[in-house]
Amino acid sequence: MNNQDLLRDYMKEVTALVEASLSECLPSSWDVPANLRESMQYSLMAGGKRLRPLLVIAAAEALGGSREAALPVACAIEMIHTYSLIHDDLPAMDNDDYRRGKLTNHKVYGEAMAILAGDALLTHAFYSIVQAARGHQVPAEQVLNIVEDLSVLAGPKGMVGGQAADIEGEQGITDLDQLKYIHLHKTGDLIIFSLMAGGRIANATEEQLTALAAFGRHLGLAFQIQDDILDLTGDEEKLGKKTQSDVKQQKVTYPYFIGVEASISEVERLTQTAKKAITDANFAHPERLLEIADYLVKRDH
Amino acid sequence: MNNQDLLRDYMKEVTALVEASLSECLPSSWDVPANLRESMQYSLMAGGKRLRPLLVIAAAEALGGSREAALPVACAIEMIHTYSLIHDDLPAMDNDDYRRGKLTNHKVYGEAMAILAGDALLTHAFYSIVQAARGHQVPAEQVLNIVEDLSVLAGPKGMVGGQAADIEGEQGITDLDQLKYIHLHKTGDLIIFSLMAGGRIANATEEQLTALAAFGRHLGLAFQIQDDILDLTGDEEKLGKKTQSDVKQQKVTYPYFIGVEASISEVERLTQTAKKAITDANFAHPERLLEIADYLVKRDH
Image 1 (tube, each protein chain N blue to C red):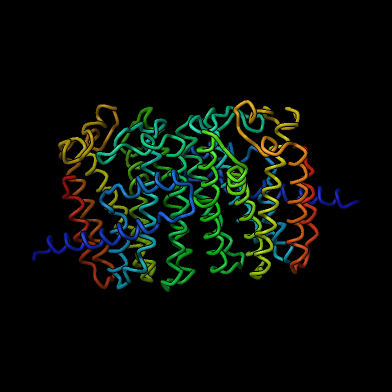
Image 2 (tube, rainbow over the protein chains, first blue to last red):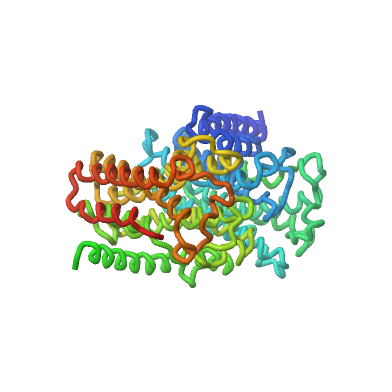
């Protein structure tokens, strides 16, 4: 098998593990109002690439850490990602009826329950993180650092800040810096978190954490620009959502500012810078992270 | 001075400390989109009784713990309470235009920003909790327990579960047990959290934590039934919101099921049970908690 096949197998294996673990996070025996549990589960188990959990696990393993110890945090970041999508799809926000080819949460469960399902997933993510310290031998100090990272990178200075800037920007993003701020925070910060959390689980040094953060920052931006490009050029079937929707809604994107060709070059440049951060640091097994970086920016969906 | 004056002075002092600390949590120098910060601040600094922070600090001090060490958690629980009010007031939920005599968050900043301000406060609350371990000598293991408690008591099994049951209940609460579930979780769980967190900061024993939780469970229910009673009988000026709104919206309350007189008796009974939990346990300074319990159920607003 070549590297690409090996990576595909690795991703399949990790995704299956994450799916199984996620479904255990919201057991049907749970003492929670049925509608709330179903609404949380509907969006959490709706598929998707499970990219962020993959990054948590790949980062932990790149430093010789254990996959099992990384799983609670891998599930947590998927809960955060899912809550952000549920709230983002609300009528007051992007007002989307479909996501990944399925009706959005509020179209099925109503707006009130969708707001609460998002709130519940956000809160429960912190519960899941704490479980890394329970029986997984991750020291409490390290788990507390992960809690703090998430509260910053998913909070007002992080992802929610990016969302807020995006909303303000709908009244007119005037320059590339503003768009970059949105991409870096709305998308990038959760990717940085995933990598750093994986590192912390494997007891990364400060230097290694800095390398993982730099990898995440550049990769996150590359990923989002790639998304902008795919949205402009991809075909509807592959993406499972209406393409050119950003154009129709007059949302400005990287190609809007610098053109498609320059955007493609920027993705390439950012990916190389990301990979260099890892190769310059001292990792036990850097290969998989590097392969994932290449895979992400060459994806067509 | 009599005990009532002493308690009033204590509450004034603690409230002033909490207000100052809360305003430092969202500094104007913060690197956060301006609208988001202002929206968070608007609701967080809108006054209110600061009851939950008071309980954190009073519980810590009842066990000989330090007020300063309790402050980050006191601020965190007020952020959680505030986020729940912002989301609760949204058009899709209770659709309220006023709260504490001021326009609700979404009436000032729009629905999208109100959703994000709530998300941001919820996430930032966990940041604030972690600060209890930074320079306040609360051990990481203990702070991690507080994080876990909050994720349960404010999450799908806790406060959000209560909210979800309340929303489902709007299609018809059929019995007192269902109403009790809503009260216990929607209101009670944050009160339980506040007391237990204060206890954990002061290194409470398991027995003391159990006593604080029992105190909180009974007091929280008494507090909410008292709210039901005040809403039915209070005058508009005192409450700063439309009274009998629950009746107009056909929301069922304790008095609706068992009458006003029996509700008043139930408040008294629950308060005595709450206080007994504390007097039966071994607390260094139980008096203030007992005084607060009496104060809360005798309040007229």
